[in-house]
Length: 92
Image (tube, rainbow, N blue to C red; front, side, top):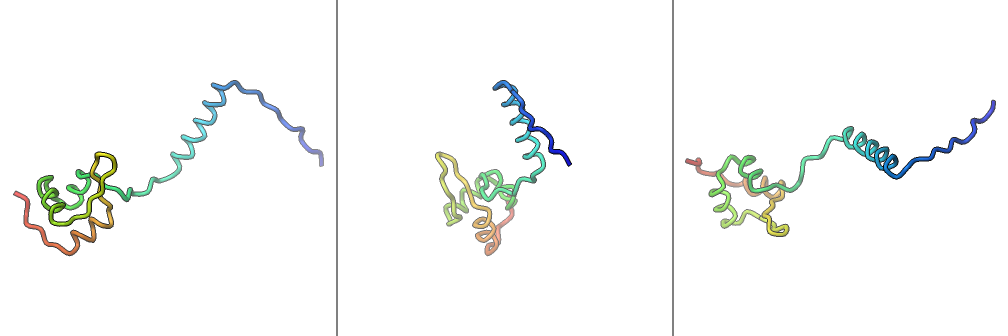
């Protein structure tokens, strides 16, 4: 059995960028992104079926909140645990 001769390809920098970009896009398209651990205020409101003003009250009552820069973020597990032990009044 004969071995194939090594193949040498010459690419320009833009061609290499395009080739790598396509490979990365293809690889990312095949992956299903995991559900984010971090939630925005809007995410929490939707998840817990509460209004933004009720969310502010929950934060004052002890709902764990984290600051990332100037943004408020919530950890999904902490939100589920905190709301899991509480009964909320209906939002009007």
